[in-house]
Figure 1 (spheres, rainbow, N blue to C red):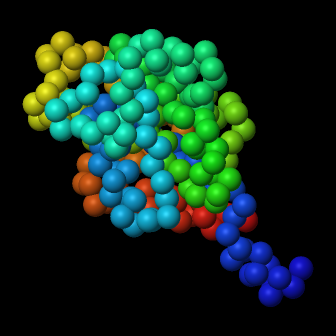
Figure 2: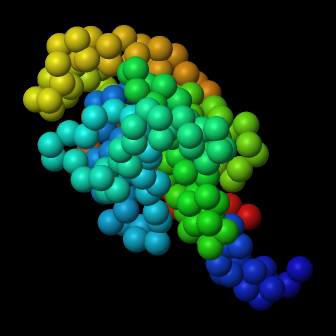
Figure 3: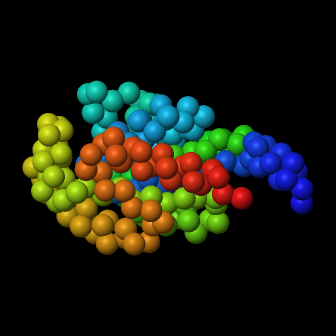
Length: 201
């Protein structure tokens, strides 16, 4: 292959985009990381999950989540509408298969902000996916972040901390680990991973 041909093929827009899976405990900072990275990579897209949990006062349906009744969520499961779905903190969360497939086929890279159960499901489907685990610097800081939300009951915080311990056990299954201590550094680490994946032949 001549150099000119190599460069021409490399510069062509990929026929299919990539999936970037972001997983980690509640309070690790996945959502903030995603929002920051989209400002650096405006061609990337963030998949908005469906959920059965109640909408919080500051949340917007269709922007933060698509809020469904348990019956509507189950109907989507039965119809095979979800690329992945899982029960997290007692509520169901899922990713729209059709939307992700369409965006990948259009050449867009897609961020999936999903839990470890959903990540396992996506990885079993042989999709072009890069898996990244986002961890807090300590459990003490994680507790502080959850309490700082001001909208979590003590019982919910205890449940999330217990789930966090189980989720952290799955971190070695991921390709990359980002310890979200200083946000700007975590954003740059994630950006470096994205750039590296885009440079792969």
